[in-house]
Image (cartoon, rainbow, N blue to C red; front, side, top):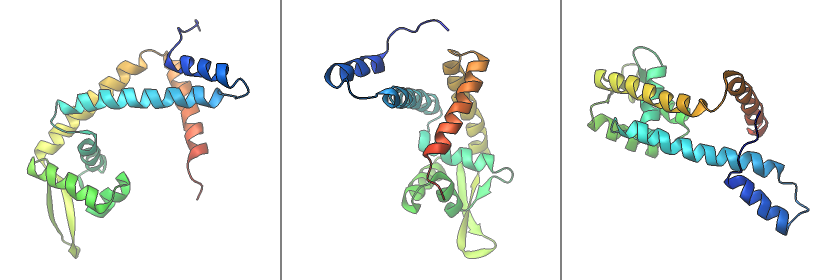
Length: 168
């Protein structure tokens, strides 16, 4: 692999080396780049989804319904749990998406107190287009790596993530 030009994280590491040469900043080099990459990709994804009149939060709701398979229906509680949102946060997203005609809420036939959330045809069309746009952004970003590098990185990130998630 060829030497890469210095990036902003290198500058930060260099500054720490000057003022605190006793610090081992290897972890900062990794996580600094992960944080910057996450921020940059989040911005790119927001722009991709904005073309469809939705933000990341609305995308997540529609994508969760789409991934659930036909009939693209879940309870608000299940959506909240999947997306790790409070019920209040979920209600706001559902209200916005329902007003836009992208989903509908209806009584749960198996629970008189419950609701079901279902993608509309417009919602299904929109999420299928939006997920394609988001994947195009991600694929474009990954083009900086070879296929083998991307595969290796994915495996390394999986291992790192598993080591940082709470143990049950």
